[in-house]
Length: 397
Ligand SMILES: *Cc1c(COP(=O)(O)O)cnc(C)c1O
Image 1 (cartoon, protein in one colour):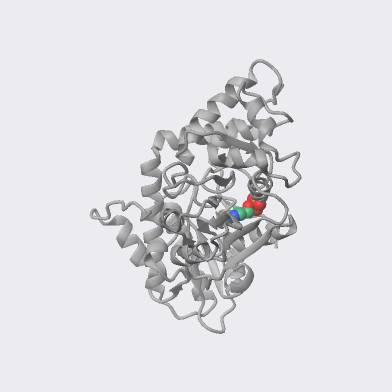
Image 2 (image 1 turned 120 degrees about the vertical axis):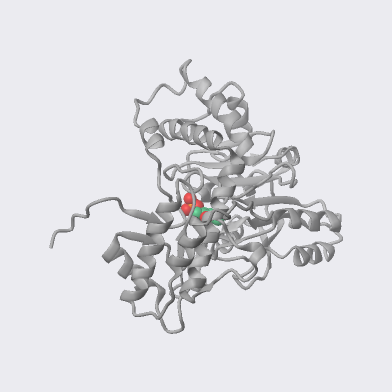
């Protein structure tokens, strides 16, 4: 049998996401001299379009790297060997970030979690309260835990840090929430926000970001972890005139400029409302099937992905494989502790009602193929999407 597959592939993993035609066309151009006179305008335009996406007035450092690089950059620019970092164990991505911190020679204190809830503000407040000597230098959380479909309440964590009166820096990973779920770097007093290109920003993989506060910049002057490639100072100095100290990913920057124009044309509040509405429809489908959503607290439901728990004894990866084989639809696998127990539906980025409808149909037919008893989740989702009263609801923050 031919391996050719006609029509579009449904890439509904929670990142990388579908890259829109406009972005693909923007990237498909000759590479220019990154030290030439034309380049600076590109960088400066991107800077001004990018800041509102992080809701910051401060600088945003752009790396030619995966998101993991920006995790490392946040730590090496601000901390010293042996510094203590408080990290909330929300799932696989939080676990990987803490493992990276340990490899860098930091002392990691974990706030344990059950992989069904977000970072617990009270537990963070208690841990900081138990540190009167201020040995903890930073608190790090993942805004949207992509392995579980749980969104942490960043504003509540900020308030908890403030209540404790503790001076720790505050780092937030927004790789799978940025440009999809409301996020406010300045208002929430975040010191380093970590971002990536391949999720809500609708780009291919290859760019990563650090939005940096004044407090983080001040810390970087004292920090003693070795850093070179990731060092903010040279990048920020070159960026002021629109340049980079080393070759940036020029063609991805063309794509970034286009993606940012698209986000601002739609407007960020409408981008957030679209994600909230499609996520609600996806959750109605899961309930309609009679399956369980991994996220336990409705205040923390993710608007960018939904992790679906398969019935006891059913391997979630077998369901995913059937769906890919029969319908050319890629769903996210279970990661780490929840491998085989969940599959993840990505509903973020360049995405609309009919793309969601097609995705949910693929899942429902996959449940049939896997002989999993289920209700009409698709019907529940479509009824919600088609209802004139389905006014978009902004995500809780
Ligand atoms: C995707 C993701 C990462 C990892 O980014 P890479 O580009 O694979 O290095 C980190 N954190 C979160 C929350 C993610 O969703």
